[in-house]
Length: 292
Length: 320
Image (cartoon, rainbow over all chains, first blue to last red; front, side, top):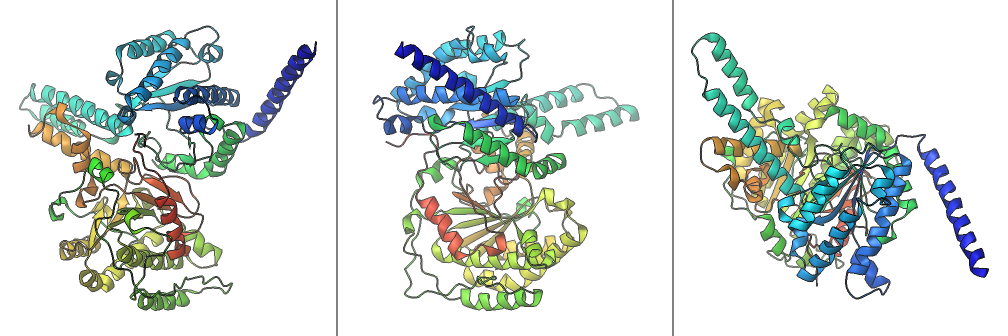
């Protein structure tokens, strides 16, 4: 009976927290809500050490996943359309093989879990995107990711989580440059294949030559993250102030937040603070985006 | 030292073909390439505000600039809180806040830019003496062309004056000047002046000052892409061989041996990159300060350096 009372109290407490959270979000919604928040989830391993959890890194990553589900919930309730996360960079392959394995194995499980009925993705009707150099992933993970994307294609919920795996921004830009060059090269070849001598054709060739010049938009449309709007806020935990090769192109005018907590410790107050800072800087950011 | 408010892009043919360090090489270099002998005395640092409450006029700004030039010529020992071995090779600065600084004092914006120029001269002096190899400053963004015409013209004129007055000092102190950005919109007289300055200092090796004028990080990447596309079209490079190192070599920062800033400082409390060196800032440590640029002095720079020296730079790997 004692236990029942405790369970009721806990349940009541969670319901109360939920109402308070929604009240806070209602107030925040008076201002502009960002379209896209990006997270660099730094600090899982240090959290595990701090909490004296298991010696390996899996415990820290597990705690980090719980924090991620909380943040996704807050973003959903606040009405934020896009969320991008950076679980695994190409640079992370430089880590010890056993640590890479500790991240890759549960990553596969988590991706497979996305398709389950009670998963957060299904709950919010979210359409999942995996972005990065997928050829660097092992086949089971690549297949699972593609399966998850196909399965959620028709989801039209509020949120679109972008999961950046085997990703670095410089790799993304090189890929975009290659694709742009390739497209323009094909265009030039086609133009050269149909030469004629009258003025009308020469004018058309001039226009085609103009089109062959690579422009900013040509590169942008070949970016991995082209489908998503540019991030409005980038949150990197652990108090780190750096981009770590994440969305360098897209964070041109993005607000950079660096709460001094480890990723598993991130909570509601940090997301509220980030949105408030965004609203404070919004007018300047909007002006810059219009100019760009 | 020069007022580096706006500088045109120097044509590629005038840039000396330096072999520069790739990102991997810079990552491996944690110690400073050369050391400076510690000096035996310090120089009092005079700030424009001086901590007082008196209103600063435009005339006083000029007087303070003259005094600070004389003071800065003396030696500056490295503060004891800083480690010589952990000094950054390349520091980048977004010099934000001149307009707000002037507005707070009831002065015209031009006074803010004059005060900002003074801060820059001080920083160049300090960097020279403390062993920083490269300083890149974001003097004028490509996005800044929409500013009032009067302000833009003032900046162009200010820069021309400063270049002419500081040229001899650059040559005598071994400071190399480089300019990155799109110069096509700059006055022709200014373009020529910058070209001459770059040519005259191209062999200086003590310290390099890179001024980003009419610069956009995205445009930098686009021009690198165009350059690579031409090479592919001409058969010099195969499409599938385009790599990160090839892109690095085409960016405008290929004018320096250290193209990747170790530390980025942005003043005035703004928390964003604003289209500055996007590719090059991949692993740069950021340091944001609340002070406006004209109020950024040696003390604030020391705080930034202390923070930098305490950070662990992992480049995505894990430190064991």
